[in-house]
Length: 280
Image 1 (tube, rainbow, N blue to C red):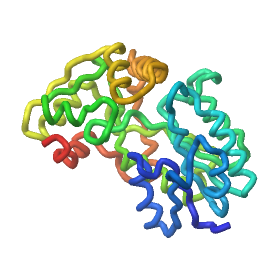
Image 2: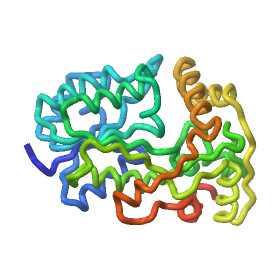
Image 3: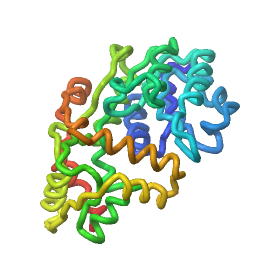
């Protein structure tokens, strides 16, 4: 067992690719769990990926086809991690999942992690700021660039958007420092914004008007299908998102990022100033 080896699932994703260099800076050896060496849907790949690993950054099994609940894959993965001696797991979950019913797929994953016997930390981030500027099923970066608008459900609901840079810093600390075991962190930015306010921040950063145009659940479902999702997952994802933002369910703001990292949370204005090249 190499006490400095960390397995990063989702290593090419929005948080994973930011996490990898942070771990290297902390002296860790990073093992990226990517195909063909690792495949969530092939359990024979778990043991080779996990053997010799001290800690794991766990991003849920990629949902595909008709699958909306990856917990069985996660159960098998955690069983394997325990059997080979993994000593720490950091799970990337989602905002508010700890309040979901126990039969919810994402909540089942959290419970599996909590009961796995491997010391664990759960990260529950709000919606990512980078969804507005990086690849995302909604195509928001493209609609901002090409049409000067954000088209999403949400209305006047507020969301405490969080930077994936902040998520990665919290994850790096939880993976390499003691004292985070058994903790759950709700990760947000310093303010909860409406999508109209998001558009205003982007407008100021770009020095060009960007507006918010409200969409609905049906349109969101259609866009998910157009992006390659199955009808079943599109319906699940659209309903989950709309339910999460309705009634300001994602409006809570916390100081968990600063409590862990020792620095202020990234504001949306700071993020937008650094992301303008995506919209030009």
